[in-house]
Image (cartoon, rainbow, N blue to C red; front, side):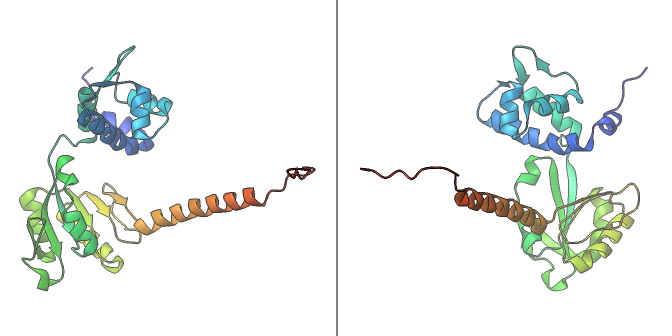
Length: 237
């Protein structure tokens, strides 16, 4: 029986595990930059902010990379996780919508170090043509199809206003983009076979607000507690 391909293996990994693999990769990178060559599952779990049992379960889907009594070789495990999630390749990325958010994304240095290369910045505002952001000129959105073919782009980032996002996604899909990272509010409708990941900063802030409110209510409840039958003790009495 022939070995299974990486893509076949990836399909067997639970989505929740896939979502945590980049977190482990970031933690391992931090350990490596600190000069740490080996680490236990407990040490890696602390660095990643997860439960060690969950981490061991997640890594078991990739294979057996740990050594009993020694732990994980940081460099080797970094490579294996990077290979599994595909960031040992060079992925060309196009960003559409160079407003404040798109500008910030275009100048983010972390893309390159994680296997992603921004090849073009596109905006429908023709007055921004040839404006340079992060070393790249802002080009007209109508050049999307040519750029996708020219650079073999499979990943597109949408940072447009909400009302433009669906039409941008439609153009991306028609041009051959099969993975989209969407920062625009709202839900995109795409064909089967096209993956969309949504990043909604306002929702994330609202979730934090919920937890902050719960903590505040908990503190208030504790402050209001009056212990029954507790005698008042006064010094000197």
